[in-house]
Length: 251
Length: 375
Image 1 (cartoon, rainbow over the protein chains, first blue to last red):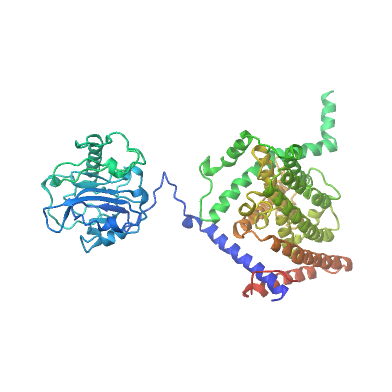
Image 2 (cartoon, each protein chain N blue to C red):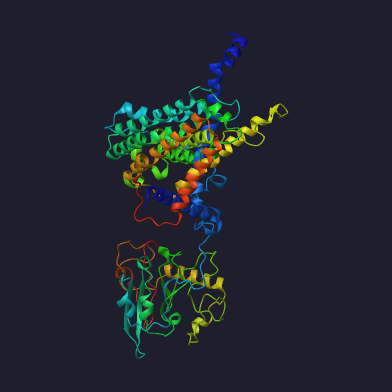
């Protein structure tokens, strides 16, 4: 390449580069990536996958997800059940701070061929955006629910007591008809009521833990950060009843 | 001292120049430099699909004043091992020449602090003083990164002073004078960029390198030298270096405007009409000058947002093997044309052919390897 060609080539490539930045500048309004966080929220698409959420109705206690979890963030305790091919779950902990959204727990869950209906699945009920330490999962009366979503998020709903009415929101897959406990039939179907219910149950869970034998830490006071889940979750209630479990630091 | 003697003193030539200069500096340049920083951050943000500072004040307009206040109030640290005196004086050595240059810049017809008969010489002389501040600041910091930045700066300044002055010489030869005002006045029918586009381009590149603007910011090189020569500076001393850098950016645009873009020339700038005692021509001239300078400054930022930093050896290659021969060739051509009194249109055609021909020659070529200049 001659000197002239090289010079021309350099100049030409600079001009081409300038053209690219100019195009960015002119169309910056459509290209801007920044989300002004407190005022705006990231727009979630219909297919947004959230964090793994457990549906205790469907869980058979096979421990497959606990075994495959690469970050070992699932901690389960089971005991033999009266039903054949099933074990009762006493404790089911998820530490979302460690989750890397690998989807393996959903993949191995044997409870349903359709991923959305499996016992553990990545559901938009809790998204990474909303992940906070107090988002750690809690169970009340046999169901594991997530805390209430922020007030301005109508599009996500807690996986609380199963709503009676179907089709209240497209994001949430319509549940397959299943036998429901009678206690749950009274659950609220409205989104706000569900949120209130979730909140109330969260409060109940935090303030009035079931009486336990020899629990080392009182659930009302914040457990220390380095406490293992076993130390925190000693409360075991009556027969076959999974018991609320509160993991996480600052509750 | 009577009032009359005071007004006499104020209207005497040197004092009036001084007052002009002070007024230009404090009413016009310092706010301008402050807002250039804001404009840089917004403009680069848009180019990079970001928003840029928009929280402090409407559209982030109060961001830079807030930053300036912060820098003023910050602790002024002098490292224990530093050379105290040199360390303290260095920012001033860089800051003062950056604003001294404006003494000879004609903002509009007649609005010029002082019209030196050797204006261009003054420009290049004052322009190279700033590097002394950079070198002494880097040396006095007693820090290896600072010293490396300062040494790079020395090499860069020595290399690019030559093509810069050679590129400035072409319009001087055309105008036949070194006075800035006369150079602008000579460009009345045709701006020198129309006659000497290559010279303008080379001057632009060389002055960007001289002022450490981003493709040539070897002196700071955040990714290599942390912050280069000013790594140990904090508080207002750092702010002086920072302001000097941006003042230099405006300076290079103002000089480019004066030498090549016709200064304050433009539609209405020659009109003698005056509206309510305000001479329309002067206002139009000032607006034209500001507009051209603004466009050049924005072009500098545009280049800054586009090109990555070049390597030190590439910098030396570009300076010694490409810019100096080309500017020298251009100067000789211009001098030949002026000496033999050939029509200038021929020089213009030759220059444009050279520029566009070079561009067309390399437009569709793929470089065989990383670009390296081999004349």
